Image (tube, rainbow, N blue to C red; front, side, top):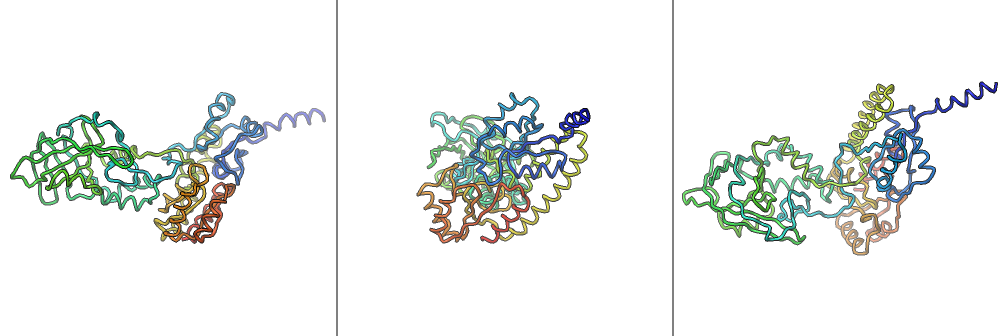
Length: 465
């Protein structure tokens, strides 16, 4: 009898399920969808907790040590500990579920688009130094722009650039559609192609080709309210019989001799001074040596993204996270690979269905603004063409001047609901609601019942507009 009991006690660890750790409750939902009951799931953070202010407890560390995999998601508390875990927990595989996902900034403010700083836009894009000494700017010849270039305006019109506008919307208080409308005006051009050969520039329009011979006329440095700068290089048509534009300016984000594969161009017949005032239209041309896919890739690589971890609030981004989870589980437990892949396929379909439901709820709410205490809904807002306006600023309660700005916005936009999350302070949100005559509504971004809660949140948002 004693031998039998001892054998059972010895066998218990062998029968125990492997432990998988996750940072937050929604990840529990994702792992369970893939792994089913084949694993035990350990949550580092419990529901109704501020995920940005958390410290590891000894009990948490013990459970992590027993885990085979820890799925991280980029939260602040993870960062100082991950490298320690790698050294301390030799058998723990740490998997970042942000893999293959474009991230956005946690800070949320009006950005200044420095792609072409003189446009004075709210959209950010960096190609080259935007703060430099005037003495660093060097003369350039037309040789820097040699080649054949075509307009990106047709790519905007056929929706090829929509992914770019979606990503730009992640870091701005404008929706994807608002940004696209802005770029439609910026890229607009009746010139399809530009050919630059030696000193000659040919402008190809639908029914005609305009040719001219151009001489270099120096550069113009722009200094903007943000303190950043831009440079346009100037060329004048010396052919008096030509019908091509008299004055041409190139801007390609460079300040010294560099071969350009794309540029913004400003053209006119009045003067360079008149061109200097052109801020809202900057026709953009890329080398014909680049494919459409390469142009899109180039623009995406220059979108300045960041470290916002709230990727679990966009169903389509969860599809990417689910693939990462499946790959890690299949590698760790290859005997269950077929199960995990079958569950992944089913979960992907469920996520598509959820996305369709949310789109239906919000289809008539495009570009609507909503005020929420903690800025955790930027990915959701970008996906469904809404605009998140947070009360909290960089993890802190808003100052009086910030509250006044929010009150003015709420009144202007006729916002009737202020959203708050469980586990976060509500005093500022309540004050804001009182001042603008709005009500407080609670939404839960850390629920273990992820799908139902996300759908409920979408319904509350839809009803608030």
